[in-house]
Picture 1 (tube, helix red, strand yellow):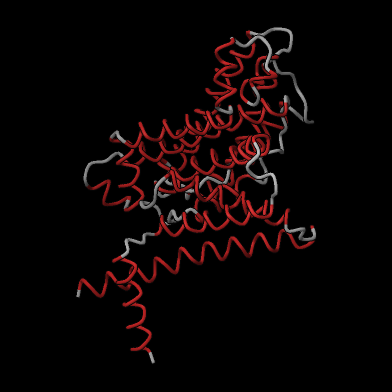
Picture 2 (cartoon, helix red, strand yellow):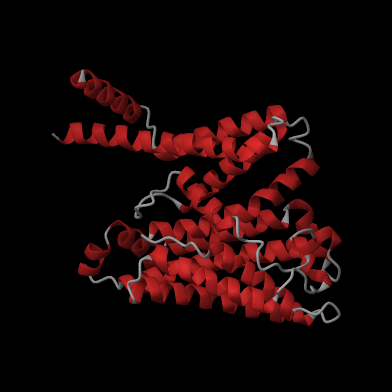
Length: 346
C-alpha cells in the first residue's frame, strides 16, 4: 500500500512540475476562487464605490502582511506589529493640532522616527542579543501598548484637515489640485500599497534584500560567508516598521483619531496572510508580494462569510476553517513537491 502511495505522490509531483505549478500558483488559484465567489455573492462588486470600499478595507492588512513577510523571510516573527500600529496612530494624533496645518508634517516626521526606533529595538533584541523573535516581540508588544496608552488612554486626538489625503483626497482640505486629480484616479490606499511595493522592489535589488533571504535560509551559513546577520535582521525589522508606518497613515487619515487598541487584531491576521500566501514560516523562501495574495484571500474570506449570511456565532469558526484549508493546501503542495524532487535526485 505504501508503494502505491509513494508512486501516486511521485506521479502527482511530476505532473505538477510539468505544468509549472508552484506554491505561488497554488495561492493565486485560491485567490481567484475567492474572488469569483465574492463577485457572485456581492451584487454590486464591480461598481466603482464598491471597488473603492474594498480597496480601503484591504489595504491595511496588505501593508502589515508585507512588512511581516520581510521579517519572516529573514527568519524572524513580529508579534508586536499590531501594538506598534496602535502606537504610531497615537503619536500622529498627539503631535497634530487641528488649527495648525504644519503640525501634520511634524507628526509624519516624528511618527516615522518612532517607527524606525521600533524596528531598531526589535532588531537589536533579535539580531544582536539573540533573543528568540517570538519572545522578544511578545515582550515589546506590551512596551508599545503601554506607550500608546500613556499617550492616548482613550481613543481620540486631533488631525489637521489635509491629513485626509491618506484616505480620501476629495474630502481633504488645503490639498493642491493636482493631488486631488491623482486621488480621483488612484485611491490613496492603493497608492500606499504601491509605495510599499516600490520600497520592497528597490530593497530586493540591493545586497540587503539578498542577505535577508540568505539569513532566513541559514543564519549560521550566512554568518560563515561573512554576512553581518545581526545587521540584516535589524534592517528587516526596520523595513517592517516602515510598512506599519504606512498603514498608520491610512488609519489616521480614515478615522481622524488614534486608538491604543485598534491594532490588536491585526498581528495574527498579518501572520496568517503571510502563511496563506505561501511564504514559509521557517524563513528564506517566498516572495513579499505573495503576502498581498494572502491578505486578499483572508479579506475575501471575510466578505464571503458576510454575504453568505452566516450567523455571527459561526463566522469566526468558518473563517478559521477556510484559513486552515488554505494553509493545508500550501503544505500539501510542499510535501508533494519535496517527494518529487527527492525522487529525481536519486
